[in-house]
Image (cartoon, rainbow, N blue to C red; front, side):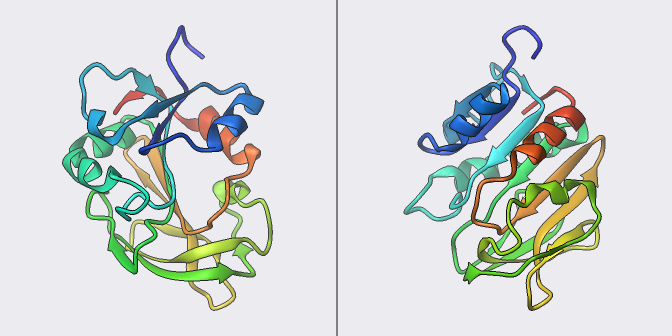
Length: 190
């Protein structure tokens, strides 16, 4: 970690158990209220995580802030940041606030998952994780893991110097994934 720059920004309305995982890895995390997205006073981060439920007003008020910060999010990834986004927990969602085309359909339940050889397949902790839906990625995304019906549940896309990883797996990412993403990410403004 450089100086007092946090490694990870976790965006949402309240704290999550993610912080315990980060502490165990020795990674620093800054919890960000959605309203501060785009503030010029934020430090640089290597990784930004947008937890499950970001588009569901019952769980989070993050979606309007993500929509307003669309260009900041694109710039963060373009400059080398690692963006990890989970399922929105709504019936359908188009990630119009991302710089690349991606759609989501809610369909909750345990799924037998088959990963590819992509380096971020280390995201998965189990072969039968709970999934809150599936992803319909645009052409820029590579499908990293599919469910038993062949639908994408983990996708990744290079964007500039960084990477966008999206998942409908409804579980914490593996510690190995956090280490990998922090090792690959470059400090960038959000």
